[in-house]
Length: 146
Image 1 (cartoon, helix red, strand yellow):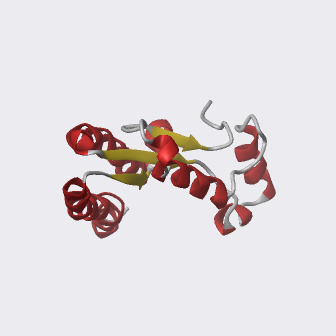
Image 2 (image 1 turned 120 degrees about the vertical axis):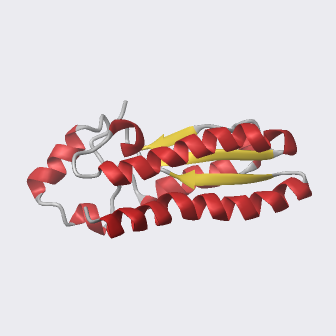
């Protein structure tokens, strides 16, 4: 991977969420609370051939999420992350049948989660039912990492 591409991936997947969070969390703390949900990936913990830099950026978000949860929890801010796996998207739809089946075999549920499944998990973490959840990574992968 060219250096410029590595730097761009780090800026988009790591630096941008950290800087955005820095400014948003200030207001949350001043208001007495809030919620942050970062989007990581299962490759942050499993790795994946050909995705080492991407995996590193997503792993850094998990470290950031857990540390920030400790830093701002006393101010009423919950910080969590979502770690999606392969999902039913145009990208997985374009996989050849053999590769698609290979990925599906890793899942005990033998299916790809929908994008809506990830959105539902984010919605849960943003809601009042998750008031005592912070510093957690919620995996949405149809059991592929189980």
